Image (cartoon, rainbow, N blue to C red; front, side, top):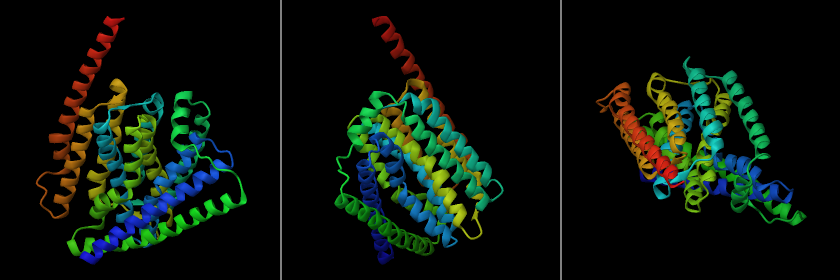
Length: 364
């Protein structure tokens, strides 16, 4: 078992290193050709931080291990919102940009519901994959179009984070192209090691590949997003911190799941457990972002703690479900824990927001 865990860790480290080299090479090459920092952040960096999920999902889907692909995508999306935004806002309360409230959060909910609908027949096949990939192409196109009308404050924020000083010389082009190729090679190697070791861990522990995908694989492949969001929050770059998590989720569902469904020999099987709990849980997480973002345009430390507690309960439930010791059904878990705590937290947040607005009005 020790050797398998070491292989898993090695695969994860190689994946993250590959993603770092890919993002570094691609962003510098783009800067050398005059691409703006905002576009680099919205596309190259967003796709680059999702590259571990892409590599693992392609490898697993090509091997016919659809549960690992599905678990990786769903687990990463739940992790990105509950854990990353939870921890990030505990470190420093996050101000939510208007675009995230009006466009990106509702879009994430819509895409989550679409994934649920496509998976409802128990299989995500090539046709579903084509639909998702067409939508990700449209998403990138509109994101680039939207970037032209972003406020100066947002553009400045991205410029401070992603501005690259890179001259367009033959040497720099060769070096950055080498970074890209090396990054892709490491992603392939790392995904091979991680998928193989994850399957072996599931066999040794006697749990499903889905459970492994939802937990350790999803957490591992999401580490680049953790680093990006926490560092951005500490710098006061809220747009990047939240946009990274929400954008990554959208790309996971459309791009990663789309590619996985397309390359899987017989499509990705979606079992009853996923349809009854994991997919609804992902939709619920996307739904929660709307009132949390909307009430006072920020995620407070209390709300961050709530999101983080959700993730802890979710992981405990997945572990208990894996070994058959879960005493609550998925519906009972929603009714007895998630719904009441969400309602109470949102009421408190709404009252706090109303009090703040009244104080502001009285000062004026």
